[in-house]
Length: 292
Ligand SMILES: *Cc1c(COP(=O)(O)O)cnc(C)c1O
Image 1 (cartoon, rainbow, N blue to C red):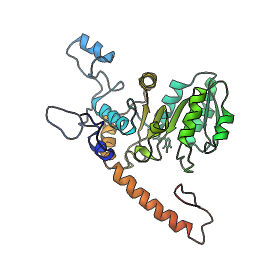
Image 2 (cartoon, protein in one colour; image 1 turned 90 degrees about the vertical axis):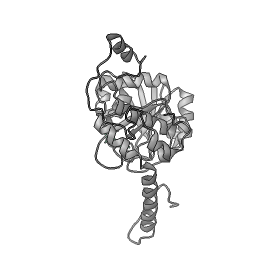
Image 3 (cartoon, rainbow, N blue to C red; image 1 turned 30 degrees about the vertical axis):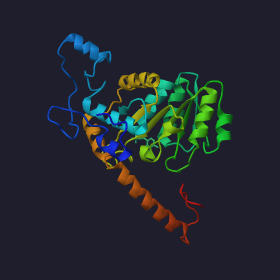
Image 4 (cartoon, rainbow, N blue to C red; image 1 turned 60 degrees about the horizontal axis):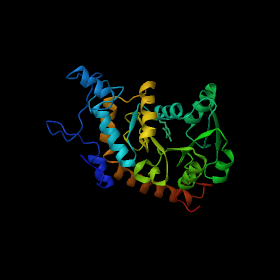
């Protein structure tokens, strides 16, 4: 189904639709490791990406592909690469885009494990990193070095809700030839679509708002271009941090209500922020929508 011209909430429901011979309105769970082909030649065409068929679930699976197409469509990216967790997305990105001796600039308030693995482990393989207050554009500029390859922004950051100016970040990235990676977990594509501000790679921990039911852990990487997709997808496959078809089914089910859940979450957040702002025993609050 061509979903390009559908509105956002309609895409949530129909974005992952597939056509099968029964007319299933939901994507079935293809709980299989391996697929059989008509011929060895057909198998080769699948392997080379010249056919829409599937070979082996670590490389691709119809249920997972439906989810990848749905989320990539919501974000406006080239394609989706579903992974077993948000951290699977983080490490696929680090491994595919950084080399020994290369450097990354990132948000100091970034999700703890994303920084922990970089500073404690990727550093063992010679990857350098600098964490700065990315709400301040000058501090990003100052941190860029000749070997900087990636600008990795988490906005809003978890859990500080620090906000970075993505348009300004993308201008700096372009000026210095950096790949702009955005962790969009905390706003979801309902509230923020970083490609509209010039991001190159967007990723989500779908464990949070996208799935929304606290019943699975999952992630997705969405590159803007085929060139980046062709670097990132083989890395996910090689690392083996693929998603499971049943996980994909649950996210496809959860994402259908993303719009109404985000609206209600926002309404509730405003009420809580206002209540706390006016509370005599509360010294300060941090809420991006607050005037304080
Ligand atoms: C939860 C989270 C992650 C990691 O995702 P998992 O699904 O727990 O592996 C990464 N970034 C942000 C902002 C998160 O909130």
